[in-house]
Amino acid sequence: MRKIIVIGAGIGGLYAAKPLSELGYNVTVIEARERPDLGYPWYDSVAARTFSSVGLKVPEDVCIPKQVLNYYAPSGEGKIKQPDRAGKSLDVHREKLIRFLLSRLEPHCSLRFGERVTSLVIEDGAVKGVVTDKGRCEADLVIDSSGVFSSCRRATPDDFCLNDPLCENDYIIAYREVYSRVDVGKAPAPNVYLYPAGLMLAWVKSEPDMDGVDVFLGSYKEISPEEKERALAFLRAHNPCLGGTLLSTRKECVPLRYPLGVLSANGYAVIGNAAFMTKPFCGSGIEISLKAAKALVSVVRGLGDAPFTAENLWKYTLLCAKDFGAYHAAQYVFRQMIECLLPEDLDFLFTSGLFDKGVVAIASLDSGKYMKEVDVRAFYRGIVSAFRRKDILAVVKGAFTYALRAYFLTRSLPGKYDAKKVKEWKAKYDALMRAAPKTVAELYRASKE
Ligand SMILES: Cc1cc2nc3c(=O)[nH]c(=O)nc-3n(C[C@H](O)[C@H](O)[C@H](O)COP(=O)(O)OP(=O)(O)OC[C@H]3O[C@@H](n4cnc5c(N)ncnc54)[C@H](O)[C@@H]3O)c2cc1C
Figure 1 (tube, protein in one colour):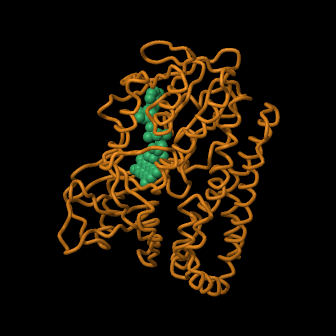
Figure 2 (cartoon, protein in one colour):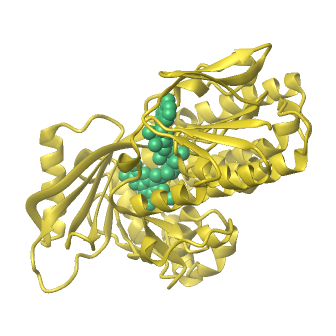
Figure 3 (cartoon, helix red, strand yellow):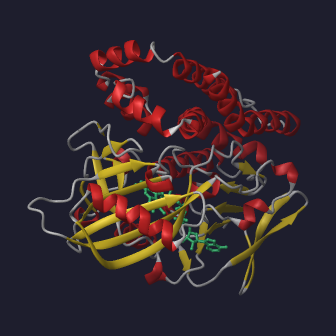
């Protein structure tokens, strides 16, 4: 019986483990943490189609209706309401989701908790298994589902084209906290703020299980206690419901980077946050991890008894690039644009109508089919007012052109695996994506001259 090892109980790896075991593989999940510590004790948003599109029927208590968000410019003004696609998004309880995914695996797969994978076994240019803090395990295929800090992926040889370093600004450090709720006669409004009080992102929304206020504070850098207090004061000024008693706190990291590009090698495939499968605007990686897992399973199914070579697994990389990778590469460029704008220009964009709710819909979802949600008249008004701001128009146009290049370059991955061509493609892709922040910032500077 051929053997598959999944490193880490990440969403994608956990989902894939079941169908792979049903295909007759001996599947083992090795997770560093103990079982009760898995998942996150809060709700995160997903599109309602997320689970049904991969054939998952999650128990009713896992999801609740989504709190539809209001986005605010740095000044705290300029509200943009997320499109209210009633019933089309859900808030999912992260611990319950992981518990459900784990329950599907028993008794089909072997689950090993409290065991850390320390390295991959690589022989003759192929992954042949893993070494853990408890010993060595051989495998025909290793699926790396160990999250953004995957040390195994980063230690792969250059030939794999997978060992991108994790750089500053590739992820944000996030505090997720629950505070007591002050009774102001209505439930806390779900409000998201861009660049509030020196941070990158912050929000408040209802925490239904503790009847508190769910607070998110995110920054590219460590948040000092003083910065945290400043951000909380900003949130309290705009949200009087936010009380002063801290009920729970947790610090995590969310990758917001452009996709890895190459996702598979001899005997190895990478999935979820380990491959930066998050939308580069908001880090929403649950749906994408599940989609990728479904793609990986379909490729493995198609292989039958064929070996897990880089050639044979290449289709997995291709499917992901076409399904969401190209779109995310383009989104990443737009994020660079947003990030380089001065706060007053962001305020302008939020109030001009140019950033109409439909644009937010497109930015926050991975499909152009939400285009119909654009409020055309508001968008038109935005364009007219933007014409008075030639500097902003220039940078938007420049970023759009650059984003298109990123999109089409991602889709131009070699159709068949050829080590030399893949290496050349990856070099081009990385050069384009790494240059995006600087190029967009220079466009912005030039537009101001
Ligand atoms: C605060 C916050 C808010 C978010 N909000 C949303 C949202 O609203 N919507 C959304 O879709 N997504 C959201 N996300 C992102 C989402 O959590 C991830 O994109 C998604 O879960 C995919 O991550 P993952 O499962 O690949 O990795 P992880 O969740 O990081 O899981 C990796 C697992 O691997 C284990 N591991 C790591 N190293 C090893 C090792 N060496 N050996 C064995 N095991 C190891 C870890 O213990 C962990 O259990 C949010 C994330 C955070 C932190």
